[in-house]
Amino acid sequence: MTWARLAFRLQPSSIGFAALVCLALAGAAFWLTADMRSVLEACGTPDEAKACQVIYAFQDTHMNAVYLTQTGIGLAAYGIPLVLGVPILTREIEHKTAMIAWPLAGSRLKWLAWRVLPVLVVALVLIGVMAYAADQLAQAYFPHNDIGFDRHGSRGFSLVTRSTLMLAAAVLLGAAIGRLLPALLIGIALAGGISTAMDAALPHWASSAELTGLETEIYGPGPLRTGGQYRLADGSLISAQEGEILVQELYEQNGGEEPDPALLPQQVMYGIATERYGEVLMRESAVVLGAALLAGGVAAVVVQRRRPE
Amino acid sequence: MFAQLRLAWRMQRWELGLLIGSGLVLTAVALALPSLGEAGIGDQRMIVLFLTVAGPVLMGSVLGIGIVAGDVELGTARIAWSLTGSRFRWIWLRLWPIALVGAVIGVLLGAASARLMDLTSPSDIFTFQMRGPVVGFHFVIAVAIAMLVGSVVRRVLPGLLVALAMTAGAFVAEGVLLQSWLQGQVELVAFAERTAEPILAVLAHEFATIAADGSLVVSQPECVTQAECMRAYEAMTPVMLVVPGDAYWPLLAFESALAVGTVAVSMLGTTAITRRWGPR
Image (cartoon, rainbow over all chains, first blue to last red):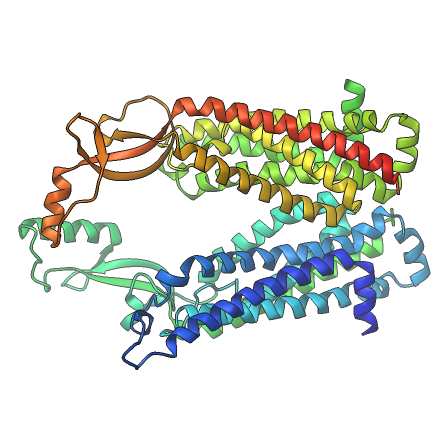
């Protein structure tokens, strides 16, 4: 517990803020999860709710609260590492204590490890609780489906890895810039960049293929949908836009009535199937954690080389 | 005047540089988006408008917190405040260059976002907060709130977090208050009779019937089956509940008064607190 006490004494406001935000969001997520699951307890009885039957079980009753909580968790996944990581070095440099602490420590790397590791552990515990709560919330919102890629990045292990990368990047920013407020501002822009890059990279962690069965639905949880086309009766493929025009023309030719199903082009959805989520998660996590290690390594090099002022 | 601007630059060059740089980049993006046609009226437009609302709050809080909390935390307040003589004067000398630079950037950005939004019909009640001089006023309000919070909290990071929460909360509360005021300004306009006259906000789309005196009355059709409802709706007039453009000027006057009032309260409050608590 000594390291935890030391970490708290050095950054009481950052850790206090992180604990407050993470635990409040986790609490809200757990409460909503329990509330939604309690509705399903009546399933199978004469008084069963509508939620027992439909895919979007809680859209009418819990959507706004769930969306707000998930948005908060998504923001905290980047905001908390930023608030915890940036001050570690900037405070020492701005307050000139690095001029004493670094020579006294002997090894700057050892000093950095002692400063960063306790904060990393505290961050992982708090973010881990929040990530687990977010995962439970996402599963409770779609109780009849495997949620697969739904809310990927803002729940479960993917949230933890992204936050770890953000924390390492925040420490690096603090080391490179050496001033708290500018590093925070640049960190906010960097967080936007990391989030966008992660989302853009997601479809590339596994090859996209034609989806089958229930996964061909355009909306809903499960697979990661990357695009759609239409298949004609002769088996050739046309674009989604061309397909929609063709369907409209067939309806018009038929005087607004439904045409012969054999003539209608069939919609084909492409994407990564739900069952491959684990594979994608593993690949992404390996790259993200590798990037976090790299950022930590660069931060160590910067601390070794920079002047303590 | 230039000496004080130079002093502000020397003391907060990173923050001011980021404010000017990001403000000009965002303004340029807002100006460039319309030339992209359809491509510029999607997510990119929403991101620019979101940053036009969130940017002044963030940058204003970051710059404002440094005025008192930054000096106290770094220990420079002891010398600076003693040398200036009047605490009020020192705070004013630190505040106005930041407020001026931010207000100029905010007005430029507000003009660019107004041009961007005029390309599409106004659709949101909060539209006015994303355009025109209001963007600059919001920056000044954020600076003033952060300065006052900094004089109480006296540490940069906790102060910044509190200031951000307070400013965001204040603007949300202001939006809710103004929403109820705007509801009172609503006029009913037949969709087909919409002219080029400016509209501040479109609150809702409804269906109306024409009363005996020729006026429009919002109503719901009395029908059971889908076919009956379709026929009933066809017989009615599609209308919009709009806030007319004239309502913009009272709003602008309110926003400017709010900015001046917040600065005055913040200046007096900060002066009183720093006098009482000293530079520690």
